[in-house]
Image 1 (cartoon, rainbow, N blue to C red):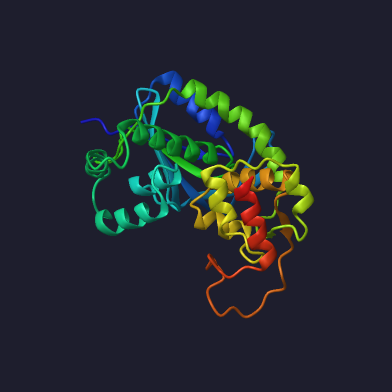
Image 2: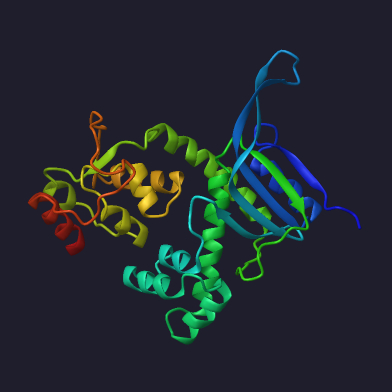
Length: 298
């Protein structure tokens, strides 16, 4: 029996857009795995014979993307939960309490079994599930498109676990969107290079909000709920299960509308809790409470 064929390399040699283009043209079925790059201590000489770069070998897995006959069908980041309840919560199809209850009672249920339970209980519709899974899959792939050096292995024939819900997506449109986002992301990286800044509400927001009609999305409200002048942008992204580019886009929009301000990182102190622990639902100053009330009333 013939062994499945593999394609190995790094995103330094073959960009994500080029990989997807090859998979699309060849109508490949298989799974693309991306890893943290671990330096081997050796250097690779580039094609010009002069330029050199460190050689990287695969470390811990960072992501995997599955394809069937040239179509994108599934994707996940190792650092994020891809449980169906979390995917639906992120898409705004489940509220915080519903998400908490479902995770506590059905944490080990397969996605397909959970989908049937949620549909039969009238929590969501089949269309809600398909749209949410598709959106999550695309967000993962668009995040991977920003990576530039990770080692990868494409294993032909490998498919996601059978309990996972897969939604076929044409790669042509994905590649076009990746190119468009690449231009946008370069602007966001330039505008927000440091995610270790915190966010706060303006001290005198009355004039700014009087002329602004605030219509925030579910994800934007979720980000706003963690703003207290202490939580960093990176911490808020983790708490909201968002990618770095995803949080940059939302924060840039809030900054452009004058709804928030950046706070420079404070000098490091001996933490009483883990540095990565995020503070949420903490008592806020009266001006912040008034600002939130003002946003909701507009």
